[in-house]
Length: 124
Image (cartoon, rainbow, N blue to C red):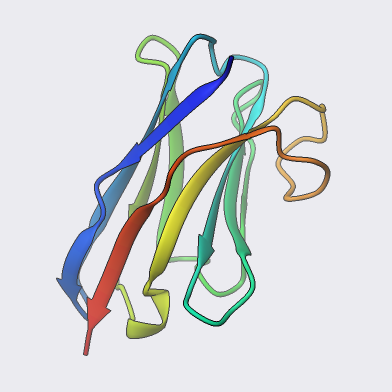
């Protein structure tokens, strides 16, 4: 069973930074895509970023491009989302997810397992 755990959320002022972590147990990230999603109250879930651990390619939504950076570490079996220049509109619960299908660094397809989420709140 694939089990993902996010951490690193919190309360930060606008312009600040946070680094979210996604760890896995029971499997290795190698060769799969790990995505970061977020959902704000009353809004649909949004795909934020993705990394294809097979080749390191990445994707960013336009809303976070230039501010967020996704990375992974094979040895630690972890993925991070470095978030900088945070804005109040970044406030949401952030989730990491794994996709088994080989679709590269895209938010497409079915995402197979999800973490429980971590709250990010950006105050103005």
